[in-house]
Length: 130
Image 1 (cartoon, rainbow, N blue to C red):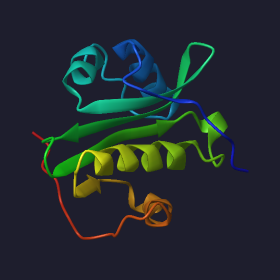
Image 2: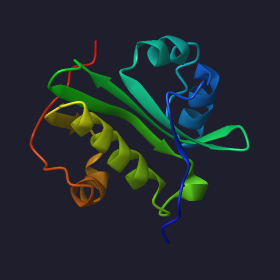
Image 3: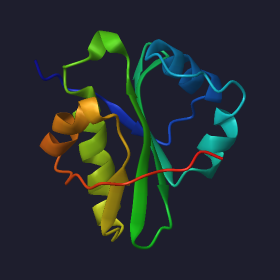
Image 4: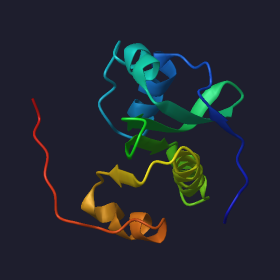
């Protein structure tokens, strides 16, 4: 069931709220890191429910031609209701309005169908953890 969500661009949220959501989705909290990440973002989008962060995506960009979607998270209680798709669609629209031509995302292979449905083409790739 698709719901309508109020999405905020660059909401004044604390890094702790993002860290809490990371824990809710089963990821490492990364305690103490998100205040700096939010400060350095190109922009971030949030869905809030009574002060709690229930949806989030961070956007990293060179501001000219390339952007990367990071940390798309939706509280598991909202899973399957369209919150993740709404965050992606708004992020891509805002980036297109800025003239950004390429938007990339890295995701778990189990989510390939979701990202294809959001308009992403899937390519082989890799990453290095430092």
